[in-house]
Length: 497
Image 1: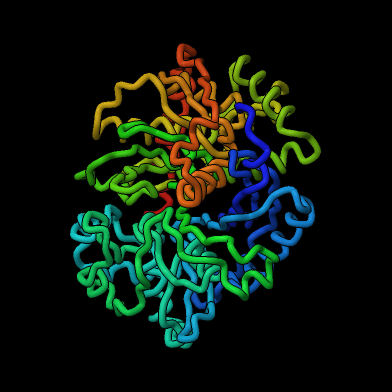
Image 2: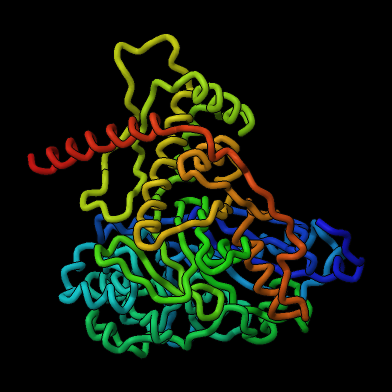
């Protein structure tokens, strides 16, 4: 990164990020240096009223956020003056609010309390046309329907709801709203008209009065509230800036052009394309939503739970070793020819029967050569092969002639993963400096553009290529596809019994 003036180093932005696995508070200098980051775990509870329901306490999460702010401010002392605050969060998660604006309850993205009422949608094709999504219990409208149908005590207290990031910004500013990329996840938002839809509200029998005003990412909500100043110690003149969905902010951090494809390696791995037009797939395999950039859309497929799988397997197989040891043993297994295949819940766009039971597969009796590196290598192949399948869906819809794809997110710290993807896709893997904290860096750019004269922050961030696209992994890909195909047959047979 180029040298910067001391005046730039004296000002910075605070990013509050509520992800699926943890909540983080980061401080980034105006010049783009990540000065500090503190984190804590998200805590979820099962709701016994439903087979697949989870919730969280917004008040508990807010207490964690304030504690993290105090920790990071103590660590940095007087090294930086915070002039702006913004938020990023998991998509599909929501917080319900009462008449006083106080939080009632929070539902995370992986809450499925609406599953039993999915048949309420009588016109799924129309929902897809308006929202760019096949209706399912993943999305906010169905969480509200499930609450109305079985938790009337909670629903009757609810006068509004918003995304998790917008709720954080509400806590900071006292101004309630819903950012457009986040609103795209509700099934109540018309993506083309960029507005709430009365037609969609009628389909789900939800009162439009529940919907707060829509706000563009990058707009200033106002100064930090007096209550938040007292809790956080931030200065009076600090402004609250609308952030957005973590995936879209991560995409923004790469500075892509229209038509670029970006891989976002987090808990899941979205595979997305930036478009000027609202594109739909007649097979309904893709999602289309608003980007945090004005007048841009995000066309998406998703490889499902990927990074979370790898993290949990690392904890099981390498509880006391660092990731460098994992990488060395995975690379050795790949070079020698791994003897293990894995199907671990990754998704392929458009599959009619997602795999619900998976595992590792190898010849028996167990050979002495089998190592933990083989299992980790197999899990990386499951991730990267599913990314390739989802990439192929996007390129089927529109030809992709560029010789690179962007990558961002913590998952791409793995050199082996980057090598595998470059070979499987036949593309260079392009990364931007700071890629491992992509949503935070995207939020930094949002604040930079809103609160300074600099609207081209990417010039401060170097980018570089990983060029391994000539390596041939076609054999590993075909072995993975065959294993996945056999497992799908077994899953269907089990369901029929």
